[in-house]
Length: 100
Image (cartoon, rainbow, N blue to C red; front, side, top):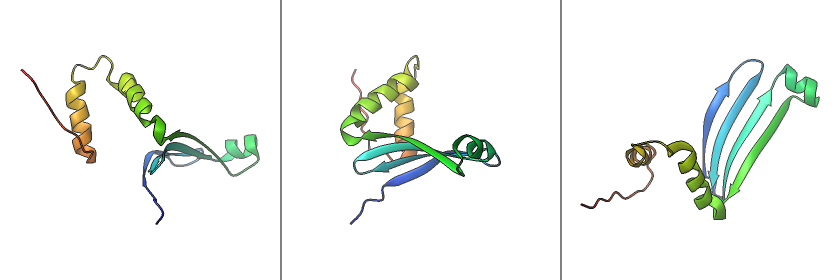
């Protein structure tokens, strides 16, 4: 059985130029891809659309998570609470702990 994974559109700009940015998660790969369309794309690439992407293989997901934590939580006093909130909002399995 094929794994279609999950996908979500992160950004969309209608009109000319048009741009769509999507995140996709499959069993062994995480991808963010972009599609551009419009007159400028036709002028530059002599084609109706231009697509580009970045793939991160499963074996690098830990490194990606650590890099994203540094990019988005550095200097954030409530980083632990934000991570919990994000996990709860998106149904991500997580475990809270504390010690006094």
